[in-house]
Image (tube, rainbow, N blue to C red):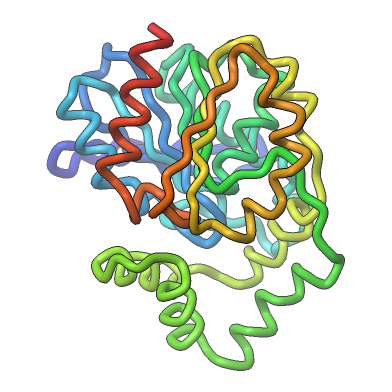
Length: 274
C-alpha cells in the first residue's frame, strides 16, 4: 500500500509472519538510499526532520516504524519470540525489498542500530555503510530489566512516564514534546517483549566481519550506553573501517539534541565512503 503525503510516501509491507510494517519514503526514487531507523519506544517520527533535510540534498530516505512502533502492526500476545532481534532484522529486509533498493547507508539509533548489526549476518550486501548512535554492539543487563516497562507504566501512568522520560532524554524543548508523544502512544507490552531480547546480546563479531565503512557517533551525555561501550570500543577501534565521532552535547537521541552536527557528520561519512 502507498499513500502520498506532502513530500513523502507512506508505504506498508506485510512480513512473512503477517505483520504490517510501515515506512515513509522521501526524496528521488532513483537516488542513493538512506535508512533512518529509530530506537525502542520511539517511531519514525524521530527522524522526520532529518529525512526531509537529506531528501532536499538529493538522497532517497526510508524511515521505518519497527513492529509495534508507530504505524506498524503488532503480533497478538506480545510474545518475546515475535520480537527477537533476527525477526526485527527480517522485517527490515522485507522493507528494503518492498522499496526496491539494494545497498543503503543505514543510520540506526539504539534499537535501530542493533537491528542493523543483526542484519549483517545474512544481509550484508544490503549495506553501503553503517552508522549508529546510542548503540552498544554488546549488552548484558539484569533479567529484571524487561519488567520495568509494565511496572512503571502501571504505577505512574502514560502521561507521567512519557513526560519524565522526555525530560531525561533531551534538553531540547521541542524535542521533548516529540519524545513524549512517541512514548505516550507506545504499548509497554511491546517494550517488555523487545527488552527480553535486547537486554543480553553480543553482535561484536558481526561488526568485526563487516568490511564496509562503520561510523559510531558517541553522545557525550548518553551515560548509560557509554558505560556499556567498553568491549565494543576495545574490539572496534583498531579496525581500519571503523570511525568514532564524539559529540559532547548529544545524549541518547543525538539527532534531536544536536541535529546540525549529526547531519554534517553523516554527510561527511557518506561522501568519504563514496
